[in-house]
Length: 119
Length: 162
Image (cartoon, rainbow over all chains, first blue to last red; front, side, top):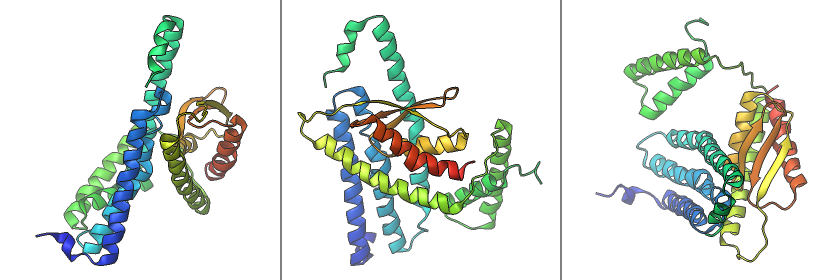
C-alpha cells in the first residue's frame, strides 16, 4: 500500500518541488565542498545544505504529512530551528582549529602551507 | 514560584518541545513533559545565565523575515560561485568589524545569522576590543561588509536586546 496515492495533485506537486529543490541545493553545497580550492572556501559550501536545503526538505515533509492528515505540521520547524542554532558552533570550532594550525605552521614549517592550496 | 520555576518561559518552551516531538496532548505526556521542563529550568539556573529581556516582538519578526530573505539570496550567490567559471577572480578573506553589541544573546543571534547566510562565517569575537572577525567567500569590498553587518543586523539586534 502506498500512502502517496491518496495525495491530491496540489500538495503532491508542492511536496515534489520542495523535496527536489532542497535535495538539489544540498547537492550543490556538497559539490562545493568537493570542488572549492582552499579549506576556508570549502567550509562555506555545506551551509547551503544546513540552511535552505534543510528548510526545503522540512517544508516538503510538512506539506506531505499535513496533507495526509496523519500528524501535526509544526514538527519539522524544530528541525530547522535546532539545525540553525547548532551549525555556528561546529563551524566556529572548525575554522578556529584551521586558524590555529595555520598560525603554528607559518611559525614552524612554512613549506607545508602549500599542501592546502591545491584542490 | 521563582525557586521552583526559575525560567518560566524556558520551561514552557521545553514542555511545548516535548509535546510537539511526541505529537500528543495526553495527560501522561503533559506530566512527563512538565517534569522534563522543570528539570531543564533547574539545569539552566545552575548555569547562571545572564538575564535576557528581548523586547519589541515586531522587530524580532522583521529581523527574522530579513534573515530568511538573506538566506535565500546568499544561497543563490554561493551556488553561483560553486558553478561559476574558475578563472573569475574572487578574493576570499577575513573582515574585521567593530561591534557595539555586547549582549551575549544578541551576539549568539548574530552568530546564527552570519553562519546561516552562506558565504559568511563567524570566526572570532574579541570581547575586550569588541571586534568581530568574519570570513567572507566573495569579498569585493570590506567596507561594504562592515555596513551590511552593522547596518542590517546589528542595528536591529541592538533594538531587540538592550
